[in-house]
Length: 484
Image (cartoon, rainbow, N blue to C red; front, side, top):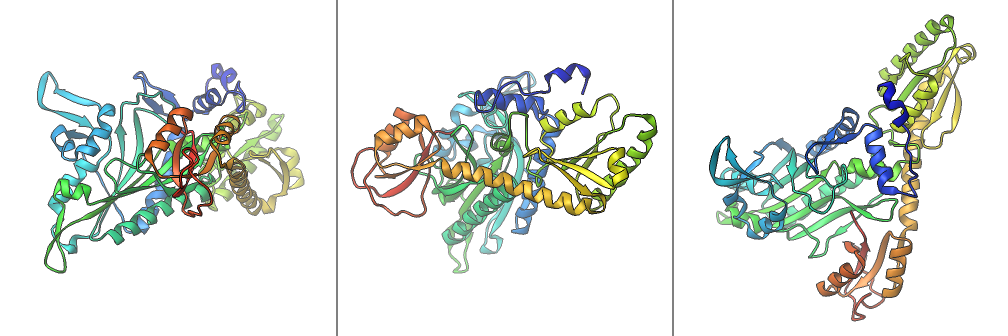
């Protein structure tokens, strides 16, 4: 980083005063991403992309453990193919980018840049699947999709192009499909909570909020510090809707022809946005150790050339020791910057641990470790450096999750009447647990009047009161919130 950028390193707004500006400053100043020339598009910088690689590699291993394989489909989809599932297509029409020319020649049929892969994949599935022996088909795609974002953009949260994975599986029965839906939802929940340290609620979407063309949608919802919900992942039972449109049929063990059942599921790079929002502070990003590209940065401290050689050698030894134990370590031996300047830079970038080594540390056989989450400075025995960094790292991971979970729980409010609903939403935000009659009319009126939507339906369903809006008999518990 050049000297010109030094004055731009710090975050100039407070998280609790201007959350939106704070978020954008972290994205840019921590060098996660930058804006591209085309509105709605972003450039993911190496540090940001390294976080995405960690997300991708972890999830990819879990997908393969559960029997899934990766594939890739074209990014251009003929309009006629999109139109084969009319309800699904109409849901994406306002967001589609269209290709109309190849060079200077006008195409005979418009091509859509991939908004999602159902139609292009299922056209192939119809050719591949003939017998029950071909099932289940368990495929996942790592790709980018393009959707013309028309409601405002925010890096990693809402952009016109984003990276994601989308699983598309085919099954013989509804029961098998239901199992797939929940299996993948649980993979996401375990990852988000245990690796990203972001607590999440899971449940079913309402009919109006489910994925277009799905039988039902299960969702993974997190709560951001500004009181808004963030949908972090979804898993859909597509029923036989697409298989009937695309003629995905198989001869069963009963020697009769059946339409297949299908599931799809996905998460995107908005998980990076969730990490930034949930864990960051006024000094910048805070990365949970399990997802941090750099778990520990080592900064040398010396005041003379006579100290330099000894300190740098010790840093090399410590760095090698921790690396051999599986830790991702970076020794910041750049001489053009002071230790204080480096401290600020790595705090901004959210590296969980900072290790400081100077002549006095070497003499005393001690190592100084500073936690990014609490800024606590600890002095540990050099011979215990690995055990202590591992222990502190695990404690940081747990502390970040607990802090976020405490916030979510304290901002989940059960309300029994509409006036309290509006008051809590305006003054506190967060999840509002209510009873609902299941009528779409009430859901839409609440959305129109308050901006809150149903994020998920409760799995408990202990009905003890009437509908929050109309006062009629309630049929379900629902969690409302304003959302990204």
